[in-house]
Image 1 (cartoon, rainbow, N blue to C red):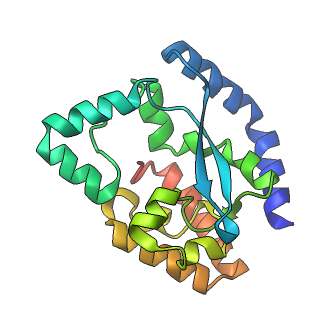
Image 2 (image 1 turned 135 degrees about the vertical axis):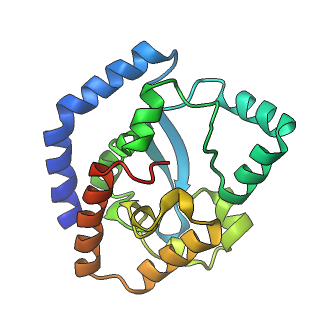
Image 3 (image 1 turned 30 degrees about the horizontal axis):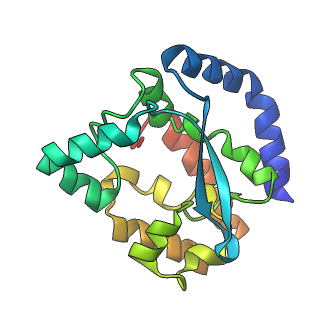
Length: 197
């Protein structure tokens, strides 16, 4: 019930900024406003995870070209699944949305639909689970969250195993008090613009 109320309040209070973000994405890049990707949720069920699109429409092609020609970028991507200098990002708008985590605002709709919680482990893909975790991992024992322990503990400064450990710790120690602390710390991290992805 807390998740539904929090998400509804967030959507109502952020509706105008979300409409502005949608407009800026359309002006800054051809293609849809939203990026929809299948993620794994509670009990291993797949769901469409919503985000504001922050990448160009030919992002996969640009990534493949970079990884084929830049060994350092390939190493970074295979270790973290992220790139500090990412050629796929929409100039200016995409970088700002990702730095401030505003690209994740549409996930409040996922919370309303019951796919996600406000706080939880990262929403991961079936490929990530198969490659890194296995289907017995705690990722399928809780609804994924818009924010969580890894987001407030370093984000890009953490390795993949560290992220997995933080998410597993969260699932094993679920409590409303921990959720509240994570929400407060998330607000502080976003306000300080630290460790954006």
